[in-house]
Amino acid sequence: MNTRVKMKIWNVTALTLLLVGLILIFYPKWVQYVEQQRELHLLTEWDAIPKESSYADNLAQPLLSKVSLPTSDVRTPEPDPEVMIDGIPLYGAISIEKIDLREPMLAGATAQSLKHGSGVVVPNRTPGTGNFVLASHRSQTFGRHFNRLDELEAGDEIKIETTNNTYVYKVNTKFIVEPEDLSVLDQNKDDKELTLITCEPMDNPTHRLIIKALLGAEK
Image (cartoon, rainbow, N blue to C red; front, side, top):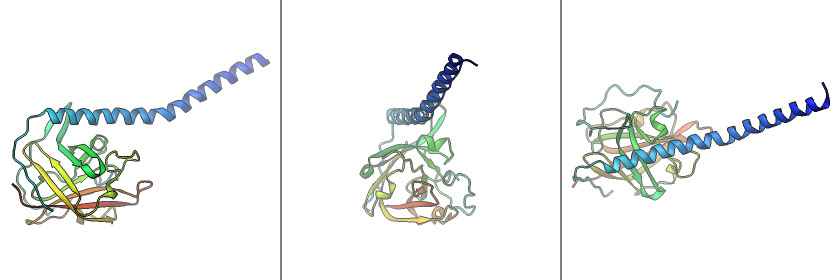
C-alpha cells in the first residue's frame, strides 16, 4: 500500500472519528433541547385551557415507577380530569417560586412521563386531600425538573394547579430515605399533604430526597 493511499485512509478515519465525537457531544444536548421544547409546549397548551375559578390556599428504578404501590389505600374524591395534549395525559402544573420551577404534571411516574415533567406516582389521588405524591428527575441541568429541590426549607410555598383548583402548600419537612422505603406514600383520612420525590445525590444516586408539604384551610 503506497503512502498516498495510507494518507487517504488516515484522513477518512480521522474525519469519521471527529464526526462520531461531535455526535456524542451534541446529541445529548439536542435531545435535552427537544425535551425542554416539548415541556414548554405542554405548559403553553395547559395555560390556554379554561380553568375553574375555585382556589385552595394555606398558611402554612427511575424513581418509584418500578416498585409496588401500597394496597391499603384510603378512598379519596375523584381526581381532577386529565387533559390530553399531543397524546400525553396532562394533569396540571407544579410551581415552586423559590427555585424558579414550573413544569407539567403528568399521569404516572414512568420513564416517558418524567422526560417532560413531574409524574403523579399514586393514581386516583387528588390534591387537597390525602397524600398527593409527585416524582421528578434530579436533572443535572441547573433549574430543570427537581434539580434544586434540596434548596427548599420549611415554610417555602409549592403551588399545584389542576383543571378545577389551585392549591398552595407550605414545606413542612425534608429528609432522605432508601429507594425501597414506601412509607412516604402512606396517608390517612386526615392527611392534606404533598410529597415530592427525587434522586439523592444528584450523581450516582443511592437514596431518595423527600419533601413533605402541608395544605391549610381552603377558601
